[in-house]
Image 1 (cartoon, rainbow, N blue to C red):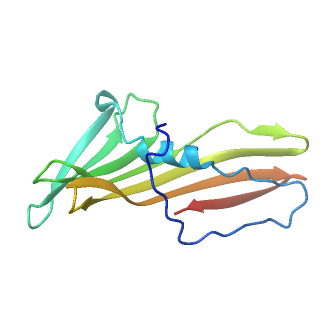
Image 2 (cartoon, one colour; image 1 turned 90 degrees about the vertical axis):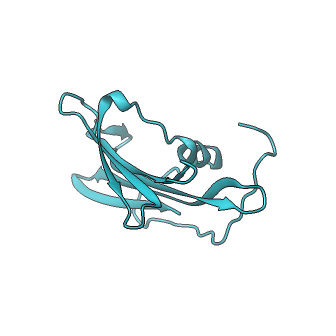
Image 3 (tube, rainbow, N blue to C red; image 1 turned 45 degrees about the vertical axis):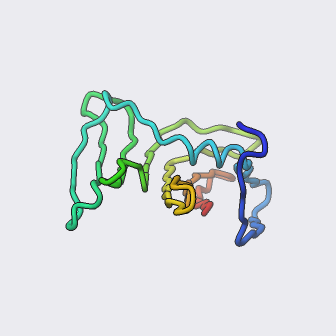
Length: 155
């Protein structure tokens, strides 16, 4: 990661807690959030694409779904500006069937993970920058033989 090559504006910052004994969530670090935001590449050999043009033909949305013979459960879309071929929005939805991780008497696993990244063009330097980024994860937790689902959101 380049050093001192980015600006961050934090509009709201909140702390969250859970009033259940023994449950603790480790949140993403700033570096992990940036890495997720910049990982927009998928292997086109693994996916089928469907193209949809906007009414005014300014943008094209490419939906991608895994090919039937693939084990991946990732689907999503790219929104492309037709003038300069820039990605202006990327969405991804991961359905996960991972095994549980057990720590002491608590079992947990992530069951889904979604993210959206939108880009905006700076008129001064004519470059695109991340405008908005949103990550949503769902975590299943089992403790004392009771299951709970937690939704975690970064935006």
